[in-house]
Image (cartoon, rainbow, N blue to C red; front, side, top):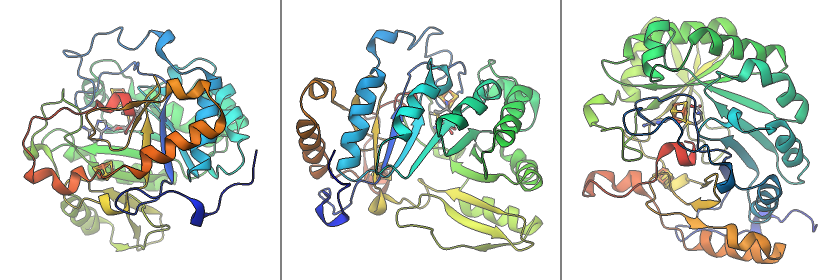
Length: 340
Ligand code: SAM
Ligand code: SF4
Ligand code: SF4
């Protein structure tokens, strides 16, 4: 393999944005049915369990090597629920060995993390993000579509910490009149345990969650509520294109972040591509169609790089900036296919 290419050689999209982050789904299936993502009444229980449609580990490794050649330095493994993918630590170990990849993270609902945290860490996974929308056990069950057990997820978070994952991230999607009363308890929990909490605005992603703007709690409102209890000050981004606006607690007890794709879109700095478990590339979370990369994975490395370069250069997506002027409904990929 040649040396890792330098920024000057890397492709930019039609709006001048480089490709830096890849979100890779390793499975379409999930053991939860969160109503904002994969509602039980719309998605069958056995959805996504057909292993034959998934990219193999060989195909994934090939693809990720190609992405590194066009600029990707950060990789996030996601799903569906990625911990349902068999032998995931083996895949992580193969990806961790790829030269040029600086960071490999995983987003999980945490339900299967207790049993796998150590193996994932040993395989070379750098970071873990666990989705956690509430600390109320009954509400947790409801918000996971009757599938999840809060205690199991908390055990998973504890196991990740014990396995050596520093600064575990917690993702919370806030919905008005659903879990907005859980914001302060979640902040307290994160501060106590040294976790980094991110509040994500409820998004109109996919086609099955009956999204309504009334359900969105703007980040500014959340920030004010948290600030009134634990004073905050804004932190600058750690790198260009950082999605979360970070704020530190004045008392030095960590930080909290806000991902404001509805109230403050950040398309201008969007350096992300997403690949579904069956090998389709989506250049935007709100794309209608993906491009099937599988046929290219049988060719040479140069073919893969050329194809990815061409697809990235043709990209002009900026859905969140255009959202209010667009007519709805519109075809959109489901969140559980591209993993957030
Ligand atoms: N199953 C894993 C999990 O839940 O962490 C990984 C995949 S899940 C699709 C990735 C992230 O997307 C989760 O943090 C979830 O809360 C978030 N998400 C799903 N639907 C969303 C929506 N409508 N708006 C905002 N975030 C959403
Ligand atoms: Fe599953 Fe994650 Fe979607 Fe919830 S948010 S249904 S855990 S994929
Ligand atoms: Fe990126 Fe599309 Fe989201 Fe804009 S709407 S930030 S282009 S994924």
